[in-house]
Length: 148
Length: 144
Image (cartoon, rainbow over all chains, first blue to last red):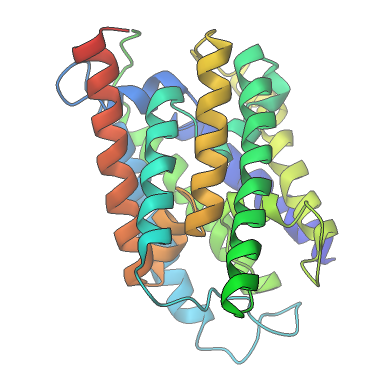
């Protein structure tokens, strides 16, 4: 049942990425190109997604637990540090260069563009590298890595 | 560069679907719909990360283009750079940056903002800023 829920949530999420145009790197790059071929559509994607989640999350998080799982798995980190800002800064550079972020890249896999396949492989390597870096730092400082 | 059409209605509808997917995942499975986090759960060590659930979510994402094609009567049209070196560098930056900062456009930009997390707001402002700067540099300074 939980597997079916994950599949269906992924499918709806993926259809959203396609219908919104977010899965077209040219559209994302045009959103980021205020000085050129600016396409403000992505503001509407963000507004739609955040509005629904904001309202939905408020109701859900009042419950003691989710419907099918034992507990909520929410991020616990609170501090705004160099890791957060530096990581986000690098992420934005990669996002601007390619027009891809993780969701749209995965959704685009079946469309089999060479650029997508290379991007996804490199992205998985990057996620693995970040985990190694975080674990290494956690070992040095004696803190446990925080899952988010 | 390709000019794209301004699509406020389709983009709002797509955004609403993204939100519904995220709300559904939290309500039923208690998980945040951050795609970089979900991809991270597919990589060992697993430590109670439910890799099977994550795999099902990713499978759902990759099923979407087939449903889209069946409904729209044609494949999803996208323009992707054929500069494979650039895409490889961008992929590493996106993966490493999301992994290191604990989220991506969905995890920080949608779910984190929906939880009113100051960390996620800061991350979103930061990647938006470097994204704008990168496209500006690439298109208007270097002229790629």
